[in-house]
Image (cartoon, rainbow, N blue to C red; front, side, top):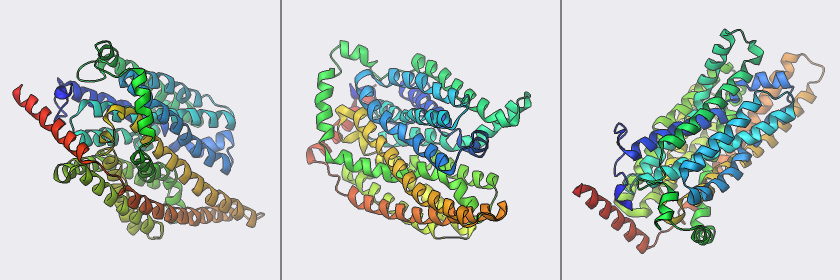
Length: 468
């Protein structure tokens, strides 16, 4: 069954099923993340329009990543059972609804509910990783996974530029600027809806065929066998270490996406557009940084086997935590940007390196493991957001109370300063936790049998492809 897996990532070979699948799943992932974080550039408008309090603003950030936790835990097992093609189609169909509905929300409660359910489309990451894992051979699966994830992840930052452009186009048609955020979200939802039909029509679960056909031919495990695999996965300590690891890289990146705009403005006194452009640059690094993590994961795997992939992951996590801790203590913008870039590079490389390890934990349950590890990212984002909220919201409210009766300018300045100090200390704590997870990742081990099986599989695939 492995003979049809691609042994290289040939991006321009559109006749190749793995290449077509790579592009379609990456674009679908991009659109899901674009819609998931699409409201972020409009939050100042939403706060004014719906009258959100500081607590409600932070709760919206928390809810946006909370919904994804549940979705990712479920979606992996669904992929193992029904195949990534049908599961992605269903997610795009269902996920487009709250994206559209948030544009129609009239109260803070409606807005918060929609943000929670929009978070479900963040599970698109898991399906993308499953689909590329099924399409590419061991020598390149880390690179394929990391590249598809990185380019898809780019959608979470590209909306900083894309959503305002959509809003300006909407305004040019005579729509009031105050309502442009609503129409922009509706348009993003419709695009996701359209993508569901493309995914269903132009993809296939594996190089050999769809899961339904393979099961009928006795080439895929039954639901009962999948339940047995589930027990094995849940009792495998390596899965839970990777859960922690992904919480410490992708989870942290998610929280930074949601808080960095305000932090840069409050700390360095720059305007919203400049802050947004800096964050966009951070997100743009997904074009290559995550790919580098997967690429070097494959290279270390070739040199030192599966253990080499783990050693690279641990090193990248340690660097990531160190860079974030340094960044949190800098108040000179130019120097801060240098460390922010270094943090961006290492956090995204760590994400790619994580999913250069995941496909080798248990090949019979790639979807389930991808779902659990992916959910770890959102648990990390949830906990990091809770930490920053507990520090920032309290500090802001204290500053407002202490300056009651003074001018609005003084109150806003005090609130911004309090938030900056609180978030800075939160980043420092998070950086320390990341370093602890780097040490924990070294406990991930593979048996001699695992190493031999991967080497044998790769040799077989290369021999078969050489004969074609």
